Length: 89
Image (cartoon, rainbow, N blue to C red; front, side):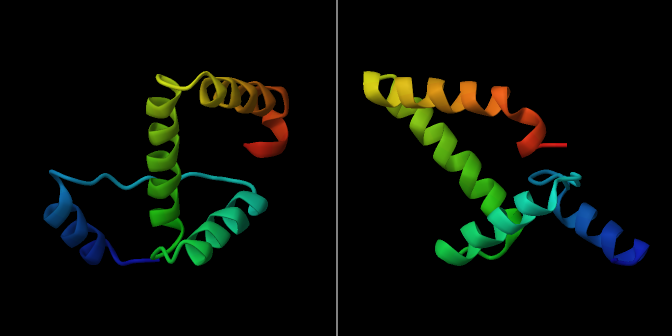
């Protein structure tokens, strides 16, 4: 774990553009984030989270113009909510 001094330095440097996000996630979520990082040449799990958000936003925008993509997103959201306990917490 980083020292208080290094954490404060990071916060001071990035206070206007970044916020630290510490989340508890199941081991398989960490494993999938690492695989995303590896498969797409990302800098780690933190960047994999940003990438996943980027992809989701892009799909949401595409869904505005494609019924197939809109249905796919709806199906994925429904599947996530149905199996939420498997995927989170």
